[in-house]
Image 1: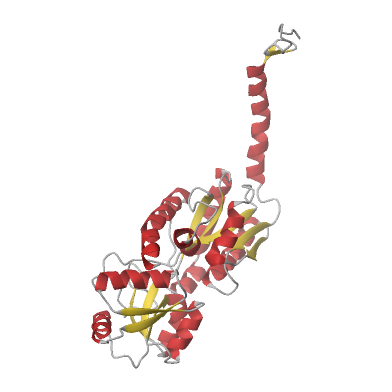
Image 2: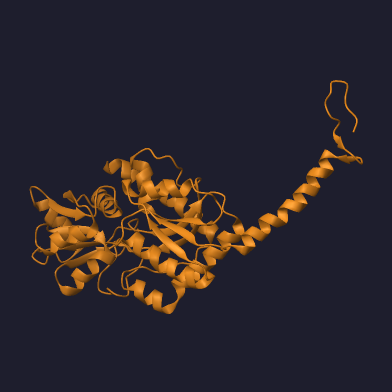
Amino acid sequence: MELKNNGEQMNEFPGGVSHTMFALVLAMLVAPVHSASAQDWPARPVRIVAPFAPGGSADTLGRVVAEKLTAKFKQNFVVDNRAGAGGVVGSDLGAGSAPDGYTLLVSGIASHAIAPAMSKVSFDPVKSFTHIALFGGPPIIVVVHPAVEAKTLAQFVALSKAAPQGISYGSPGPGTNGHLVAELFRMRSGANLAHVPYKGAALAMADLAGAHIPSSFNTLSTAAVHVKSGRARALAHSAARRVTAFPDVPTFVESGYKDLVAITWFSLSGPAGIPPAIVKQLNAAVREALAAPELRERLAGEGIESNDLDAGGFTRFVSAEVARWAPIARAAK
């Protein structure tokens, strides 16, 4: 090997092989390794970080999907609850994991569209993640205690305006989708509403059933049992169309609020950079699982409908949800 006058090596290896050719050969040798790695995935258990406490919608949907993925890929998908800061703690863990497909995340509107608008977070809700598949989620439903005179949404608004202190409503907590849908409804309708935040959807519904609060903006999945039992009266919900399990309950759109379509969505994501081959497999498997008749029927009772978004379509959905809800979250403080 010849040397330059300054002692540096020539851009050539023994036998006349240039650095450029060597790099090409090296790339050819390395490329099949990455391809094989994606092709063999999953070769060991996969962790799904659920950034909320056990028992909630995020945890429940995460476990349902994990069970289906375990059966599909013949490898364990294990849910790991990492609650805290409205989903930020677990999401931060997911964003900082290796992008090899072995750490995934139950993402959602709370952790990716609302929390980043309310406080400073270390991740970008779109760019820091590989967004894989949408699970869906329940709409928000407005319910009142049976003693409340309002039978329709219009009567509810009129009743709130006539009351000197307005009508109080319970939500699952500050900055939750129930709170933000209520705030958007208040802005659009002019209703006189007073927010009573709870530490969870179930607690708010328990207080409504016990006549401690007159109304609630809550997830349909949590309110359903109380509506069916007669302990709460449903006035409207935020789904795009009527829910099969509650055909007599109108939507906000039918009631004159055309932009008030919203679901408390949950989804599957992972750190940015997961190989496209793995993403494609996961997206197809999640969509297949959610479309299965037994699971579709089970989720329909909670107002959750399956979707048909590929990974690209779901990523665009996340971007749109961030843009939509961030200003509302900031306005609601």
